[in-house]
Length: 99
Figure (cartoon, rainbow, N blue to C red):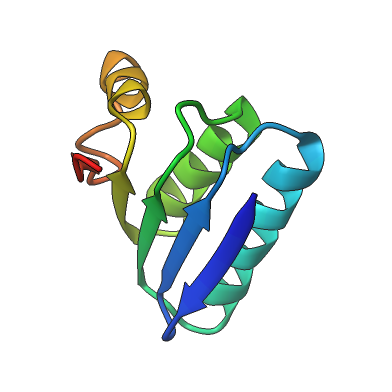
């Protein structure tokens, strides 16, 4: 997994988010954006078909408690379907990029 940061509020993740270390790294980078003053975050997940529950929980905290407006762009239809089944598409501002 690789994370690229664009500007003050955008992250792009390539590769599969699968390990605890991946989850911690992604959560850490999102936290840095939030602590840097981002009140909206664009998270592009280009390749991953799944998302660990620790990341989902962290995103829920950002949206519900910290009031961050999230836009999550899913590059894999399976990730979009997962988030849709969990009823998170509206909360997370999910859209499918069709890559």
